[in-house]
Image (cartoon, rainbow, N blue to C red; front, side, top):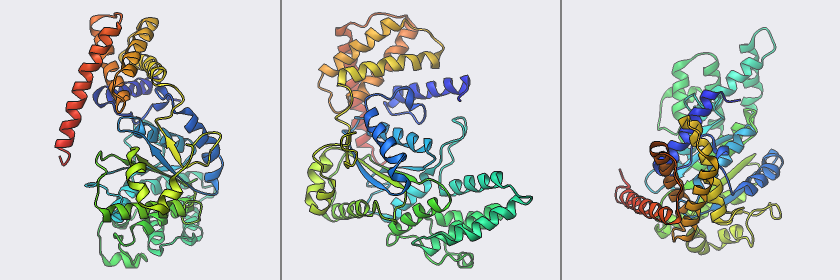
Length: 429
């Protein structure tokens, strides 16, 4: 249970993230999430409580930029943490992490793996090695014998070291890393951590640990599968991989596009097999991905094409379409605005007239839904609404008329457009 201090910090974090860039918060999503509950309910009851206990699944998340893809992935991450899963949230882009580069994909997955933070006040413990450290610490706490270290060592040597894994080197690296943590062998721990994160390290000590391979483009996806296999061997329920296509420009060379398509096809085929145990693989893209990229690859198109999106009636469907939500745009934004009032009150220690602010939220939502801001209307709404609440705090509460709501949105849209153009112009910053 979060303390009052934590609740206030979470509220301030939500307001800061939404007000600055219209971006979803890292924590506290349950306070503002609205409209996608039906998707999350299906994932929870059909997948986290059932299918992922013995299999794996691939889901394609579709939505326009500013339409809630990243927010939804963060919701899925919190759902994963609720059931003890390890998560890895990876932003795909041509420069930082192109999906056709297996080495960079592995490096990003390995470095972003994390368990649920013990407290929001703690720094996030990212990376496969911090996951292993958490497991070792838990094993030591759970040990019932007189010598906990010896008990955990036996588990490592008799269970972990004998787990099935495609890559002998990956299994040995994790086993030897766990032993190094247990024995406080700092030098070996650091060496193996560098290898597990995909760094190019060649030292004789690696062979002494039974690690004979280097992680490269040629074996990057094999090593990623091996990592997921060893996460299950560590005694964890499984892994949720969340890939977010953040590049606006989907035009890539034919060769790269073919590699991306082939890699996705392989992932879809592997889901349900033992190579990807207890894994939920999500790939978030804009709608044009299905219209302009996937049709060029019939094998992938056949696997991803579905007549209906995911729902309680079709829980097996691959597609999660964020343009089809539980509420109509105006109702969704009104509810979101109302929830943000409560968050703002907690963050700023203020008490608004809830009825008045509910009417104001409805006025801004109505103006937003009636305008032609289809692509990023949710981001525009939350940024404008947070700005408005700060003005209410500074100048006193007032009624937001329909005309004034349209003026605020128009001003906010111009600011948002200029910011996005600057981002595109300086995308290599």
